[in-house]
Image 1 (tube, rainbow, N blue to C red):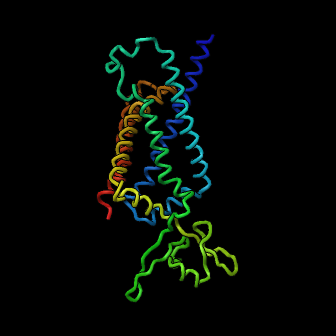
Image 2: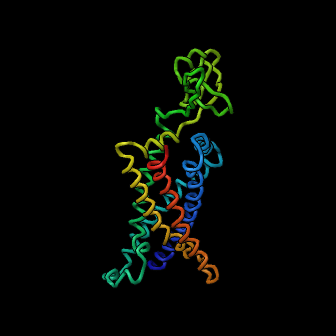
Image 3: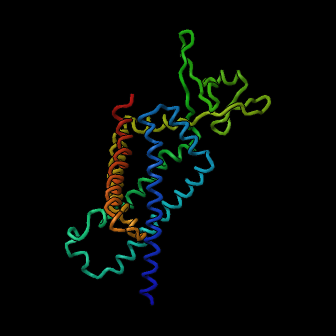
Length: 279
């Protein structure tokens, strides 16, 4: 009876692992599409994307689902690893594991742990700054007028700009509140909203003269770890859900391998491009 309950519990955990894993694969694809603007678009496009991702109600719901999925996936992974190790007979791992399984399948727990550490570090470096850093800069543009260069804040109202110089902004009767909002001090009315310059923060991080190269290498290594995790995890998720029809399994395996290589490779290309090629 106890063994039956244990088996059922393992099956449920594997279902959760599969479902949350596949959902996180969808998140990776969407996150990659947005972040590729760091290579193929300008600062305005990327900052507009960042604002949309942090203010749109539907995206916020998806964000919460992503956080929950990461938590469930990690906890489930640790529990399954412990459960499998406890149920495994003594000496099981000694029988040529390299011949019986792939490197990825044997090290999913280690790979997953490294990815979790990366996610936390990544969120501290960017997500936390975006949401909580009081010194988070607003996006500006440089305009040359009569031989003089002036900095202006870019606002969400197309074609509407405010001077970045505090004295000039004050002369207009404006002040910045809540990090991004421009208010008329006299009538207490919101006049516009600026863009948090996540593009500037990201570029500065990977181009930092002290640790930029180290950060770039660390991110590339993290994407290599992700690739190995996905190589086993993607097709394993379909097997756990019982979707291993002989007709479609080769297609799933092929797509899974392509996904596991292409997605981390493109993610890794972003910090490499910023550090070495972005002017």
